[in-house]
Image (cartoon, rainbow, N blue to C red; front, side):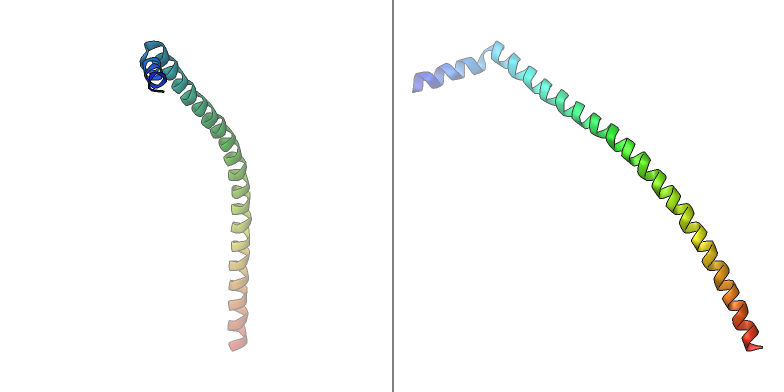
Length: 84
């Protein structure tokens, strides 16, 4: 068993093994980067879609706020007339 462990240690210390491990690590990083980049593109597309939705809702809310202010002013005017 000790001979097998020593042989394994020798292989792990060899320049060829170290180079293969280095290349594997680079491949893992490249894969992670590619996946993140693909996710960022999808995220940017989704973000743009939702920004449009939010912008439309902001306009809708602003219109309703203006209508509410108009109704409040009308209500106050009617209350003032009732007091007279």
